[in-house]
Every structure is written in C-alpha cells, then in structure tokens.
Length: 243
Image 1: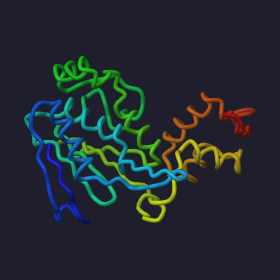
Image 2 (image 1 turned 135 degrees about the vertical axis):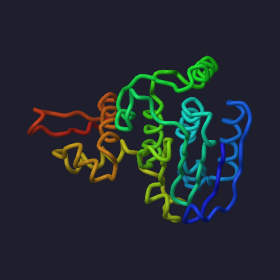
Image 3 (image 1 turned 45 degrees about the horizontal axis):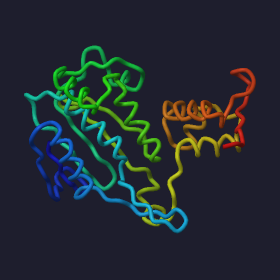
Image 4 (image 1 turned 180 degrees about the vertical axis):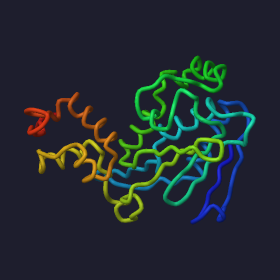
C-alpha cells in the first residue's frame, strides 16, 4: 500500500510512504503511519477533560483497509491512500463482483470475496466476519463521528472510497471547543421542533443522506427514544424523554 499526503491537488504531493509485507503487517503498518504521520488529532473538551480523537474514525479506516486487502486484484497497481486537508481517498485495483453494484453495497448483501483464501485467513484470524457488512460498518462509524457518509466510485479499473470531513471539523474554533453532534442527537433535536417532518426532510435539514437518517432513526426507535404515532400518512414523531 502507498500513502501520500497532498495539498490542494493531486500534483501537490508533500510526502509519501510505501508499506509492504504480509497482510497483517501491512494492515498494522498503514494504520500506524496514518495515526502518527498522515492524520491529525483535533482537540476538543468535555467539561475540563481534553479529548483527542483521530480526524477519521479508526473503525472506518480499518474496515476500508481490510476490504482493500481481501478484495483487491494483486496483479494490478498497489493500493493508493491519498490524504488531503478535507478528505481521504483509498483506491484499490479490481472491480466489483458481478453480483454487486455500487448501489447494492449500501443495502444488505452477501459476501463475495475476490480472494477467498485471503478472506478465509482474515476470518479465522478474527479480522472479518464474512457477512458482507463492511460498507455498513464504515458508514455507521462515519455517522457516529458526525462525518458525511462514505462514497464509493468505480474508477480506472478499481474501486475508490472517499471519506470527507464535515464542514464543522474544518472550522478551527469549533474543532477545539465544541463536541460534534451525533446523527441521532441531530435527528432528535429536529423532530422535537418539527414532529411532522418526514425522514427526507430531516435528512435535508441535518445534511445527511436519507439512508443514514433511516439507520439512525431505527437505532433511536430500538432504544425507545423515538416513536412514530398514527398512520404512515398524517402521523407524527414523538421524542421520548427517558434514558
């Protein structure tokens, strides 16, 4: 895997590293390089306590890298990780299986590893669960960190994953002193004021995708923090006031 730190464009390469070795050593090496050299840890405060978290969730990065190692074409170019001020991309050689499209990645689907033996090793080592939940895990990790949902593209004979920072995280003052609002908290806040909103209206209001809002809403309903009252058309949302 090759990691590059870029400025405003792909031609503005600041520095780079190449990680080689076994699958597990590459995974650990790339994560270490990202955490220590390529990414930053914005500071925020909860009360008197200083909190430092990586600018992209570790769970999302780990899942993206594992997917790259399991699904890549090892006859193609090495996996390329590009880090910019406001985004991070991972390009991996190899196309999607015939059974899947980009759109289907975001809905329940089976696991179709391009490299079954590598997938089996990663499964037995406890790195993956072989249920086809990788994209769901990446999306949930980004949403929980108050980041936009990941985007996937088919590009140059491979798959490109794009992670972006939220607009709030690009504002230094807010990064230092404010705690990011989770998707679930944002939904509750909107529905307290506008109980007749549809989920599409909520998504537009908080700047999230409809699928992300649907997943977060299900979590709130399962946790009995939110419920829908009345018929599907003409009903309203009720925020439940209990822990």
